Image (cartoon, rainbow, N blue to C red; front, side, top):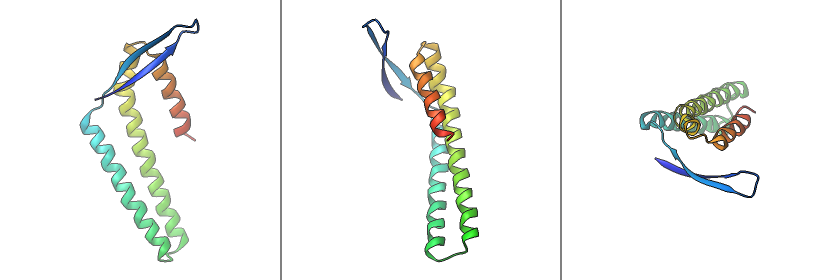
Length: 110
């Protein structure tokens, strides 16, 4: 479990600090780490394809596959985050965590 401290500014000069538990299902995190490890290996093989002068269309197809793997890992992490951290944040009325999620979704979906 990881704890993050959030500071809320109430706009009237008063701030509120609280710790938000950052808990995840260890089995799901392991799956995500395994996905990322697989993507790293796949990307290394694509790099070797370029170094070996393989056909550009083959390389591009493999790059698209790596990008898809990374997107799927990100989607799995986002779902895990929503299922645990955001549920806890909503229960704790932690609007800042929800705002942070919205910001990261915008960055992730670019």
